[in-house]
Length: 327
Image (cartoon, rainbow, N blue to C red; front, side):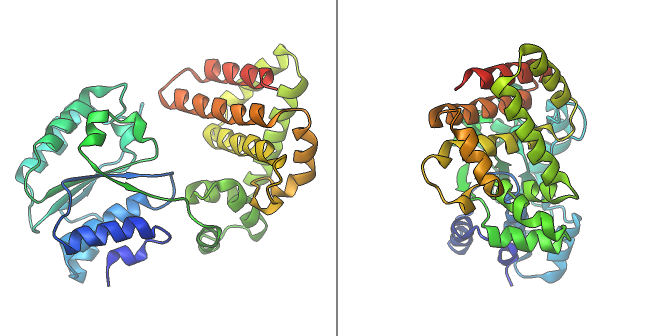
């Protein structure tokens, strides 16, 4: 049995990887590109397992436990800005690539969230990684995963074979939530608001989380529709203190996307806020479809700026006043 068999709803990506292995054309570097929570890291480890283990269950078990020297996963740091420091890359990671493979015929170095580990605005580590990608050793392979590939250096992207990953269908998300024991009443709204991402669906399905976020989003829209500057500044301060700020902004983005398309006659079941269809129709009368779409873009820019370590308070102030001005 292939380890790739465990990956669901990514048929295009899996076909490309199987074909590469079958034809002996495994690339020296891959970029797995797609939303969070759709199986990019799982696929990377599964592909490495198929190549390195070659069907040997004992080797596959060692890879799964993280104890095989020829399949290594280097995630962003837990502290600070989470970037992998250039000193760590040069002293602890890249030297391994000079001596690999160690036990098997091939070695894989996997970097989940590579856009966080090697952001374009902190290029020192990225340039050090680039040098290794430009001079690959035989049978040493790199897999970078990213939901924001534009945050990587263009030269890194150009050295990688790009494999695209799609959002997950509702049926798969439902299976995942049920297997994780999510409250039954939270499953449908969590799926609707997740935009096909399992990590978002799981976060939303936690006890009461989805209802609380829906109410927060409605209160934000109420504020930008008719409140004065003082209320918006206070709301910005409240949002900045939230641990789930990015999830809240993603939910707000879904809300305005729903507003934008409501006037176009999209079936209610296709909306993230499908249970608020009447409310959406009423609110859509006070903002044009194009303005609602522009609000989606404005939220996206805010999230990106905070991912680049912009000041939260400043970014949120700009967002809320910008939303109010788009009508």
